[in-house]
Image 1: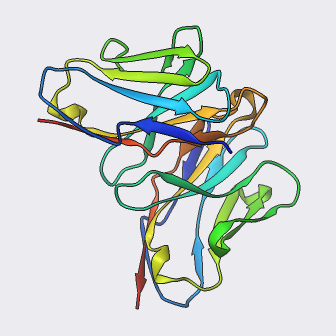
Image 2: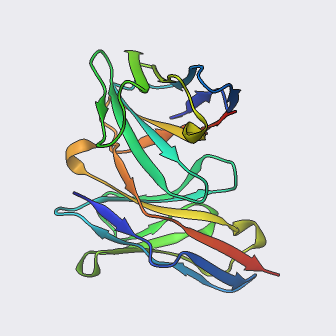
Length: 114
Length: 116
């Protein structure tokens, strides 16, 4: 069975500072990997995804993530955080054998200090 | 493209009543849809996989008689919470996979259910 670990429950960064949110996955084969953002009371917005190919993935809102097979990681990065980035971030893993079905991490809450 | 619409976005119902939530794929056909539940400040937990024209597959621990899922067409799946109780209050989110071979599912905006 697949699983996702987001080690950081809560991260606080200053506006303009860089950001890295960690994600580790467990899956027996090459996974599909996703990062979503969720504002309070809202649905999920897809930031980026990895299926295959280039391991550095560019997403929306200036986010990027790097797939590292050797570390089973898919960390999310942003060079300069904006106050509007404050939200909940979820990493998710999907399976080739059951496309569309995702397992989510517990999420990381991002707070941005002015 | 790839828009999934959930309705209603918010619903309040009395304890003991049933409530139906709809999940529609607006611009693609979806043989498979997924229903998730999210408690406050928690992650999304998969409840069931909905397959068009067949019975849903429920995750372990999810009561199939309480959470009825119907996937009667290629663009619509419904989740009915029967005899709802306050502990069923939660955020329910659906996702739908494009039957043309997409590797990902697209999420609806969620439904906030409050049982009073």
